[in-house]
Figure 1: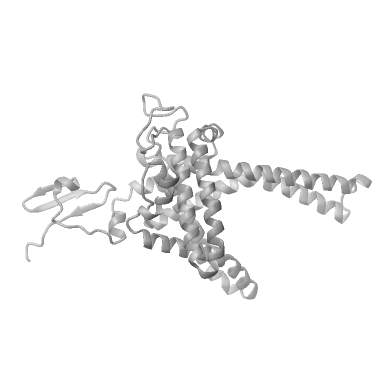
Figure 2: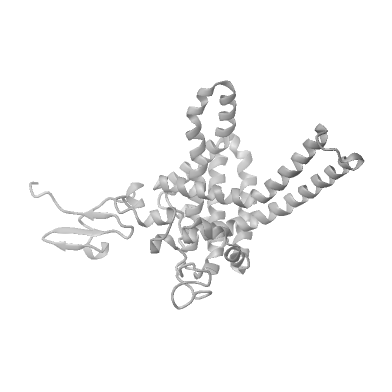
Length: 334
C-alpha cells in the first residue's frame, strides 16, 4: 500500500502539470490568508480579493476528496485538475465536515473561555474557589482537546471516505458507518501509511517552502496520504484491493448493511442527492479529462469498436465512458 500510494501522483498522465498546479494552489492557500488580513486592515478594497483567497483551499480539499474516491476505486493514478466547479463544491462540503467534527471541542472551549472572562470581569462571583475552578476547567478542556484532536485525525479520513463513496455528506456523520470503517484493519493500515507519509513528507517540504519547491512536495505527499486513506477504507465499503465490488458487508441486493450501494459510489451511480461524485458522471457536455488536459484529441483513426461507438458510411459516433459525446464525421465539402 505504501508503494502504491507514493506512486499515485506520479502515475497521472499529466503528472508534472498536476503537481505544479497543486503546488501553486498550496502556495496561495498558505500565504493568501495572512496577506489578505494585512490588506484588509489597510483598506476595505482588499475584500475584492476574497474569492482568490477562499477558492484555492476549497479546490485542494475537493481534490483530496477526489483522490480518496480514486483510492476507493483502486485507481493507480491521481486524477487531473478538471471540473473545477465540482472541486469547489466537494471542498466546501469537506470543510463543513471538518467543522462539524470539531464543533464539540470548540463549544467546550468557548464555554470555559466565557466562564473565565466572566470571573475576571467580576460578573460572576464564585468566591475563593472561582480561580481554581477556572484553572481546573481550562486544564480539563485542554486535555479533552488533545484527546479529541487525536481522535479527529483518525476519524476524519474515514468520514471523508464515506462522503467520497456515497456522494452524501450525511453519510460522513453516521456513527455506525464511520465506526465500521474505523474498525477495519485495512483502514488502520491505510491510516498509518498516510500519517507516516505526511509526517515524513511535510518534515521535508516545510523547510523547502522557502524556495517554493516545498509547496509542490507538500501537495505530492498529501495526495499520496489521501490515496492511502481511500485504499485502506475500500474493504470496509465493500470493495476489494482492485476497487471492484467486494462481498464483505454487502447483501445480495447490492446494498450493504448501512444502505451504501455495493459499488461504494452512491449518488453518482444511482442518481441520488449527490455532490461532486454525481457531477462526475452526469456532465455529458464536458470533455473527458484526457481531452481537457491535452493528452488526447478525437481522431477518426480510432476504431468505433474500441471507443464504444458505431461506424456508418465513414461516420463514427459514440459516447465515451464518462458521457462525452464524440462525432468523427468528416466535412462532405472538404
